[in-house]
Image 1 (tube, rainbow, N blue to C red):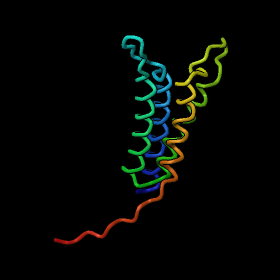
Image 2 (image 1 turned 135 degrees about the vertical axis):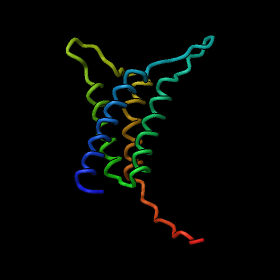
Image 3 (image 1 turned 45 degrees about the horizontal axis):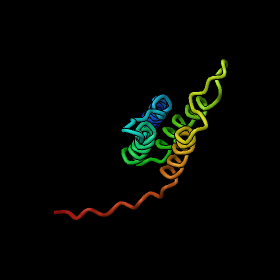
Image 4 (image 1 turned 90 degrees about the vertical axis):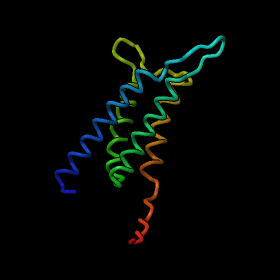
Length: 126
């Protein structure tokens, strides 16, 4: 991959991570209530999606720096949106789902970026 192509891929990864950080933040508090039980499908879907995004970037490009760029966008937006707004409102509150959404993408990012690269197996020519 040339230098310009790599920069473009990394910029796309930052934008994709930031977009998913925004969407995950908006949807992490969604629940589905069945009787007296509230099923937190929003946080489950948000964490699974963040994991899929970062693992997908790492596997598709075989480059930990592209995964790092996606993680930078994701965790950066989640961090910014966890701050109180000027009018005092919070998008990420201190409840269980909010804490999981604040910490979860960071842990996933550390695991995906730090995971060792496996050596390529030699192909058997047929």
